[in-house]
Length: 360
Image 1 (cartoon, rainbow, N blue to C red):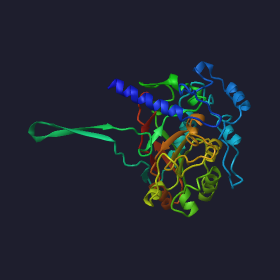
Image 2: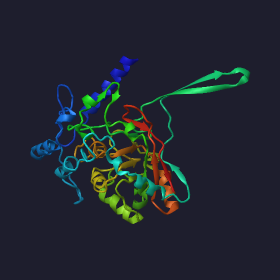
Image 3: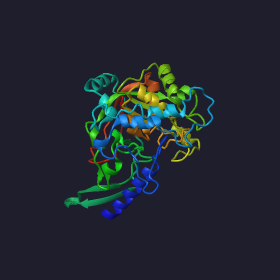
């Protein structure tokens, strides 16, 4: 069992490293490992990284395609968002909480003050594990009990889950510039793990309802969500995104699938990398979404929007069920609420299934 698990995890790690290229990225052709300026935590230098990015040319094939919208940034501008504006070291060189640090006790208390009616809305999809085994145990007198076993991989396109900061990286490393080959083994991760958020994530939540604003059922592949559109929608909804907020972007994934759309790991509608700038500008602590990174990405990024995880330290709530919450916001006449996401306290975990709750 242990050797099988080791082979499985090694395969996943190799695939992740091989697909972790971003603008100007490099990986080793012989080993597939990340070529990073931070082989050990002690050797990491933000200044050195910035100097290197300043003189390196953009990698071939990373220029943006033809854009008709003048608001689209250049490839160099996009690169600068994820190199010059990193949050590495902002809360200390050994910090493992990332932007969740922005959720102070005062921020959580203010979020609780948003509760008026007590209405609760779950943002979790129904959890159906790939393996579910049952065992009944009889007891004297006709009594009995049942226990069950779950086997599942929660990362992916189906289970609502929270990504820990160690889940992804680029050629400069994981969160804080740590080396994934050092911090992640077959026994688990040792830095930036999900148990860093064991006290829970309780903050003000803001929902951005893209379909309702557009007057359409869902976001389409030809019109991804952009950062400036989030700004426009927030203004139209009469809500401002503030530091430490949980930003939930509803794009209409379920309506898209009901209409026959295929939402998976390939080309798909979702959020363009311009949303990353909005997230950094507003100091968002958590991004929750039903549609994730829009693909293909015109800049050739492996992780266009997932890059906010390891660059900015922003927690990601993947595969959220936001349609009921969007309806609730419309009925309540407001798009802000108390938001609670309580990941499992998993030692060495790269994330956790979750049942996030919005409370009005």
